[in-house]
Image 1 (cartoon, chains in turn brown, cyan):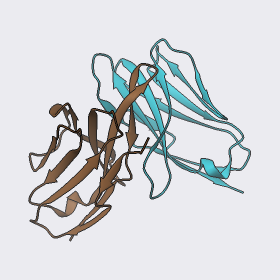
Image 2 (image 1 turned 90 degrees about the horizontal axis):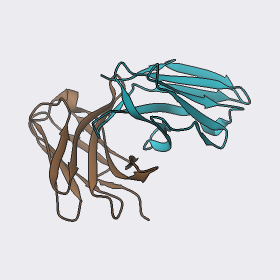
Image 3 (image 1 turned 45 degrees about the vertical axis):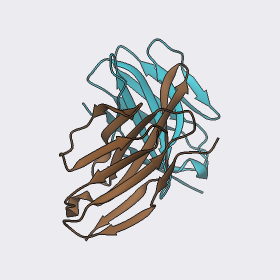
Image 4 (image 1 turned 90 degrees about the vertical axis):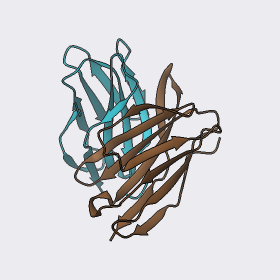
Length: 114
Length: 110
């Protein structure tokens, strides 16, 4: 099976702009989670989508939003970018291991905000 | 609610052993362990379930102490390839969300 793919891999934006990141999960996986990874904060949970519905949400401002399509592909959008949004954004799709959902990560999108 | 990992960093010589701990203040259903190499995505290592057995994967194994809500990852006879940052992800009882610790950076030198 192909792994989780994310596009683009790198992005450079300026403050105030918006950005959309894309994630294609492993075939058959219906759950997609998004994380922000920074050196100081580690992996911070943004939100999770399952069957086109947001199932869980982390503690991020409303500038961060997402959606999931009927084919389970997911997009994440960040509006009005701030310098502090510079990070690696990871997407993970969930599959069963020992009857429990296990997350498999994509390579990430590295966003730099200037 | 973020689990606490200790130590924050470990430096080893090849062949040495290490233990990484992950503690939560909440009752857990499962603990997931991942390793992330520099510039790469986190890779799933193993999962520990409440009431489950200690897991093993080559020379890397882990346990889950339900009384303490703590999981430990054991790396024995470390190899250069073990270098990376190890994250634990905890799932609380009654939820399906994973919360990750801040990571433990492991460096193995020849």
